[in-house]
Length: 165
Image (cartoon, rainbow, N blue to C red):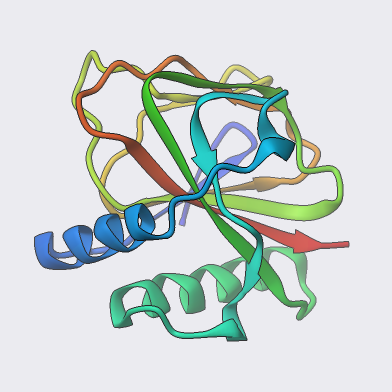
């Protein structure tokens, strides 16, 4: 894991087949959740789940297990991690927010975002990260962040994680 500002980065070695499997799985789970309308435009978020809820795919299971281990390692305690799927359609963005109900949060990107398509995650400490396949970004829940407008052709998909206080 490397540190950039107040953010930690872990890179998974993820195959093209695993990228496609997770991408397709997230699209199948797509729902419209009205609770997020104040924070997100042109997109969707699914309901929260826990890692033990169900194994949706072997590729996703590896991401979930490693993320839970890293978040617990950063915090020094062992607590369950919740996750949910997030998607932005072209033109979508996510406004400034935090995960103050969590001590640690993270986001995983299952596919590449083309240079110039936007969709970068920006933190209030000035750190900006461009999503790429297999990238896991870990940060304290109180760190305020947003997702800049996304202008790609396919949805910008991610898996968000939160480790409760």
